[in-house]
Image (cartoon, rainbow, N blue to C red; front, side):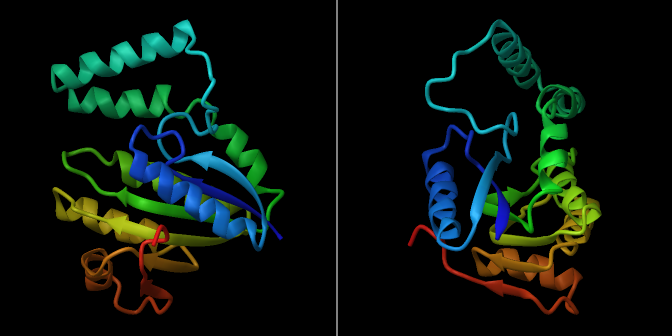
Length: 192
């Protein structure tokens, strides 16, 4: 079996990296795995990656947008600067049996944007379009600022063939809006 694992591999958060690496080790026991990162550029960076001038400019732009609280522009930043390699994923998903996506608080919105929801949906929709099974594993779900975000997130996550939530609160937010979905479960954190 061949699969793609999408997790927080390029995160600066050590907990996210541990979860992603633990999922990778578990999946390797059953499948050949290609890795993509949910955050930042989707290609998994090596520790020794050199920072290019383009990378430095992107980072500077993001810091300015955050500093001055330009929420709408931050959404555009993610779409234009953070997704530039997504076509690589689209080509890779054709040659595998399944997409496994998860580990960490992947789908939430603290402001009026839909950044994490749209990013998650982009991976899932691409896999479903290619006719692949999608497994969302150890997902953190919420909080959301608006009901519209919550419903959009439930709609996206409902495209998955199997879901495990990392906590009861995440499961209850999902289940409240989609009680007919039968392949959703609460599980323990994969690191433990």
